[in-house]
Length: 262
Image 1 (cartoon, rainbow, N blue to C red):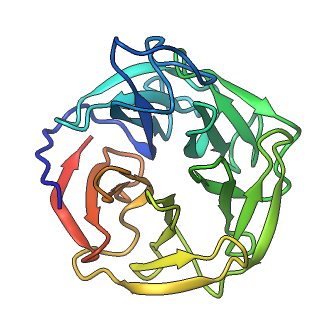
Image 2: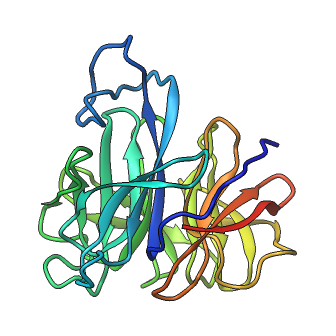
Image 3: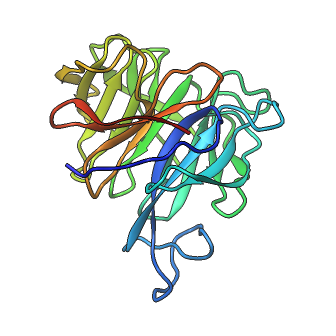
């Protein structure tokens, strides 16, 4: 298990995290977006991106930040222009996607592409057709999300912006987190009862892995798995105030480090 020490930083209501691959000054281009024009699939290091529940002006759109995995400090990139319900990075194209909240006044329950340099979101299609959140994309570009309309896994068409239910999960879910690990195993952290599941991407069925013993209900939602360490980075349920960043060891189903406010 990798140990982390994170300092307290800015107080914003984060609701989504995703890891993003970056490379140093010695590499070339590639991919559909960039952070400082430095982005490609064969990464030298990882960056963590977070989106706020609302922006610093108090309006109902999310702001995109890059978050340091060393000390938890954040760098503002820009206003997404939409209220997000999750984010996911496509490692095959270098693009960042987000699902929009059912309460978004411009494009509710939709899929957007997010510009890595500016944070600006662009709608894809005319809407997902379902309440979708927690997008996750595997290593070969297969995109999924979760719908609480059916408590089910859905596939996402990244070109059309539509969602299709895969199958019955057998779960009752609320305030969850979903992400692929480095082996393309899809995990779901269920805030309804503090349980951890794996999800079959072919059938949509959930398989119980275990129960968190040191996490209250509704914690560790809207997170992402570090492909280098296998740890899950998620957020607590602190309402509209500051969030605590939680790092979870999925093997032991316990907190790897104590919560730290971001």
